[in-house]
Amino acid sequence: MVEIGNEQFFWERLLALPRPGEENFLAFYDHRLGAIFTNPRLMLIPLDDHLVHRGDGVFEALRFEDGAIYQLDEHLRRLERSAGAIGLPLPLGPDELDALIRQVCVVSGAAEGNVMVFVGRGPGGFTLDTRECPQPSLYIVAKRFVSKPESFWSVGVSALRTIIPAKQGWMSQIKSVNYLPNVLMKKDAVERGADYPLCFDAEGFLAEGSTENAVLVDRDGIFVVPELKNALMGTTLKRAMGLAAGFMQVATRPVPESELYECREIILLGTSIDAVGVVLYNGRTVGDGLPGQVSLRLRELLVADRKAHAQPLAGAS
Image: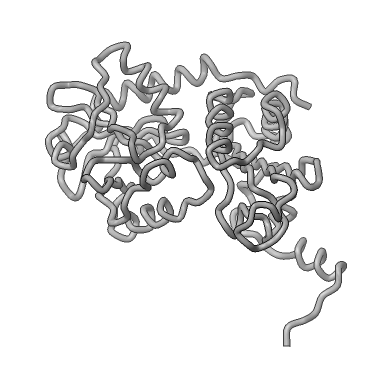
């Protein structure tokens, strides 16, 4: 028989229970408690929060380093758009949320890290009816940034076409917590021996990776961004397009898979990877089998841009 515990038993067992990955969770905020904590064993979300059992919520993931946070304004604008698209009011105004995110980063004590912001429909029950949730939930987590070796960029990565289809239509434009397709994409790629998956829409055009945007340098040397009908515009992609426009032509159009076998470069873009070249796609060599000059230059520009334009965390307390 399973034990029937009391409150004391609960806390004793909880605090003694090992938690996988806890060394990477540095600080978190819980809206129900209105405070920031640093013990990851206390980081709990109510099972009845629609964020958990219905995927009814939105999120953003940001990067901070050297006492500054990158593209905070851009991420908060997208968070607001995503929340608005599903009729979910943000529990705090933009200025309050901005200050709270910075404070969580400061409390983490990390020189560099990622901070994730989750807004859910809130606790209140297990049905589909949003009316049972009287208040939206807000959770903010600062976690350790696990640096990649320099070879990640100098050697490049592999990718394949995943069997999981792209999200369709308006749902693909919302950064929701419902990432089951993304999880299955990554699982598919890993099980088939590749680093990253790429998905395609119903018409056979390139959409995105599991958490990365994919672009290419075509045969004519043009920086091509896939038409994002069924993919989310990443903050790194948006910034990379502006940076790339400073030294080459940038175009947006549908990209059939056949172009990935003929292009000069395939480049993945994301918050945690900046820009990295794909040197093997579906087992076939891309370009000359080495990261291309555009991917290497973009990475340098994105790193420099982050250092030049990140917003200071100073002032948070």
